[in-house]
Amino acid sequence: MSNVATIEPRPQLTVGARPSAIVPQTMDEAYRLGKAICMAGMAPKGMDTPEKCMIAIMRGMEVGLTPMMALDKIAVVNGRPTIWGDGAIGLVRGSGLCEWVRERVEGDGDARTAICEAKRRGEPEPVIRRFSVSDAKRAGLWGKQGPWQQFPDRMLQMRARAFTLRDGFADVLGGLYLREELDNGEDRREAQTPPIPPVPSIQSPPAIEHVPPEPPIPDPPSSPAKREAPIIGKLRDACDAAVAAKDSDALERAWDEIVADHIQSLDKELYEHLMAIYCEAEKAFG
Image 1: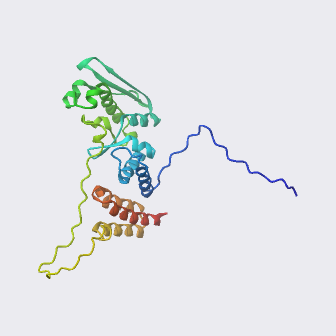
Image 2: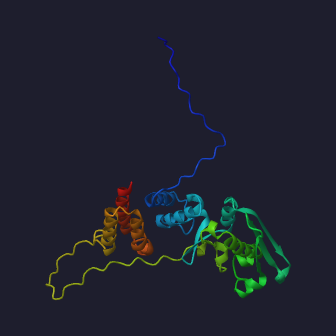
Image 3: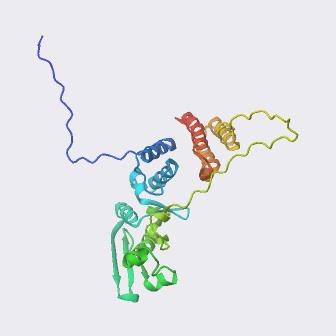
């Protein structure tokens, strides 16, 4: 018997390796990732809550963006998710459907026109779209304070790019508008997210008239989740029905119809209570 000890080889680090992005598989994982990003202070301006980060991550993943790229490239304008121009052209070029994209600005002064051409693989002709200074004036954009005054050629280029990419590669962009396309001349980062409406408070029952002279000390107000708000019972019933029917699609529809459409009016504790109900039901489907 040999006394020589066998030394297991140590794993070698791969120099220059590109690790894969961490991609959440469920809404709960997306929420937890968004929460970690917010707690780390790395959330972009306008994405300062786990819920906003979660929605941006999910919308970005639908068009092929990794979670961190989605937070960086997805912006909300007037309640509509949009994608920054550099993110859009990156998706199109990386889709394998684009042969080439060419952009230029022709003319001088008020005669300037931005032109964007994009050739889709398998199509005989490229998609060509233009946006001129005259177009910007008609839209009330020309000369406005902000990027239209500071970088007029760039903004003309972004408008032409938006029309070209959306018309030629709507399937790649998944219906997303370009952020610059909806730019109304306000500060780009400040206008990224509309103000959040105040969370409506749950009114306590009206006081009974003719109370005794020495009213009893009221109990401390309970949290929204403890009051069993109607939305909790509604979601629980829908989840139970979906589990009983073994219908995962019905479970997702229940969340979308009952919670997702009203997410901005929910406070954090109530939202987390609803998320716990959904995640518990989701376990039934593996």
